Length: 312
Image (cartoon, rainbow, N blue to C red; front, top):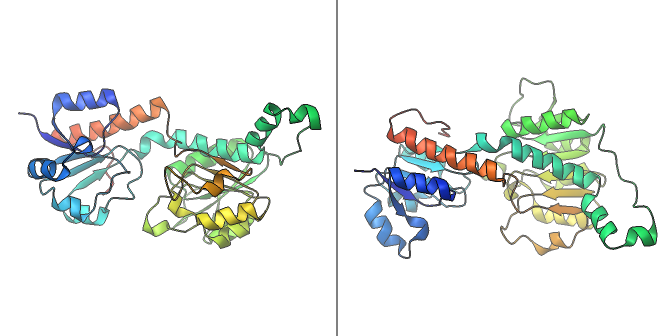
């Protein structure tokens, strides 16, 4: 008899097929009557496949008394009550290790595109303005910049290495000093004041909500570039919009927003911002690795082996 697994968010198609071959799946993601499905699945499902887009709170956990594993197929788990899960003996795994390089690449891509005004320049050529008005305005150099990184975890480290290769000087802000040669700032405003480019790569959640405040944005200044590949909650988005509108911040490259998938329309009206649809990890290869990691954690759990990427 196959073990029972609750699917709160599906994996990519080939991995769902593989999951279904080994386990009896209870598809909460497809249920017309969630209450009825949870009534049936709750007492028997010891594992759940989930994603950071799903809210896993006390109310849901109360319906899943047998649950002992939540295998999250994303890196982020902001909407999950980790404290309550840990208290109940429920292990959480995620897939951060699978997406480090792709997210770091996107962070640098956004930074360079902002500094060199890539989207504006593309429109300048397409519209015929180049022929009518002549050469596009000069931009800041992408060489010799000071790049500040907010959160020097795995992704932050990968961003730093890429920026070093571009000839950038690296500074960082975090909860504690790391054993690296980069310049450490224990005050985010001071880091922003020092930096030409500020890249936000810290985890989301209550502990970092509004971390990049209006004061931080002002310190980055009218020639500065802000890149956010973390979570929309980390940046004071109204302050960011106001700074971009008023010339108090030079440019921004944004992959994450307060309201997804319908961000504040004021952002789309700005020419000094590059918008990406929370898709930094959105390559076929990376998403396959993330799905495989989630599935491998489920397999390890039922085989009685150590989990590959435990969070708690």
